[in-house]
Amino acid sequence: MLRIATIGTSWITTQFADAASRVPGVELAMAYSRDADRARAFAAEIGAAGSAADLDGLLASEEVDAVYIASPNSVHFGQALA
Image 1 (cartoon, rainbow, N blue to C red):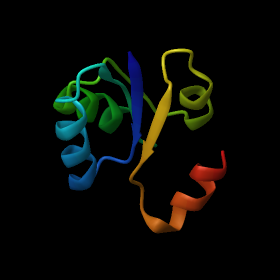
Image 2 (image 1 turned 135 degrees about the vertical axis):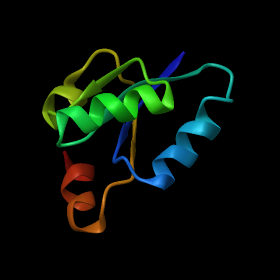
Image 3 (image 1 turned 120 degrees about the vertical axis):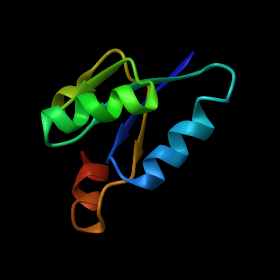
C-alpha cells in the first residue's frame, strides 16, 4: 500500500486525490494545510485518513510514504526541500 499525503487544498489537489483514489494500492493518508480546520475539512472532502497543520510532523509521520505538493509557488520550493 502506498500512503500519500497532500500539501495544499486547491482544486488541483482535489483532482489529484480523485485520480489517486482510483489507483489500486494507493491510500490518501493525510491532508496538510497551515490552517488546522481547513486541513481537517479537506481531509474529509477527499477521503484522507487524517490531517495535519504541522509540516514537519506530516513529513516525519510513519503513516506517509509519499507527498504530493500542490501549494502556491511562493511556498512550494521550501516545502519540497523539507
